Length: 186
Figure: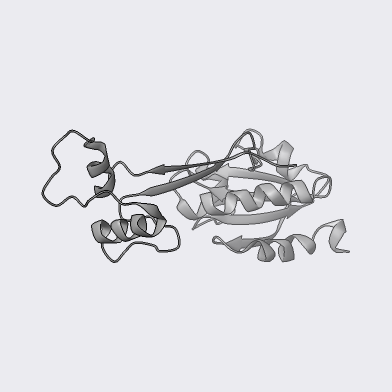
């Protein structure tokens, strides 16, 4: 299945774009280059205007931005939240192992590892439940389990803390930890 990909070149801040916007009849600034003809001379004009930081491969100079986006496709899997009020029913009383990610909205590494937790929740569906707990909103639970830095991922089985992984670790590290406590690992 093919997906539409849109690419835009925002070169409004590029010096070359400024000279091309001047129009044919408008006076040109004294530093403007003559109009480039052909692909080779256009790249040479970009290099002359932009300096040595021009990428020869892409023909893009300083100030230009390339933006790529996949349209109509959300690739992230949202991990549900657990709170102080739902902790007992969702984590402690769960029939299957539970992975809880302790995080905060201001934490960059927490945002980096969130897609991996979402992916694992899909891969281990029926064998592992995944939740995230905002430590700013639920400090009691975080301190009860000794969470001192975030992100921290904890595995609970039969209502007990079994293992913890601290930091934005690779997905393989989380898989190794999960495999110890799920049916897939046995």
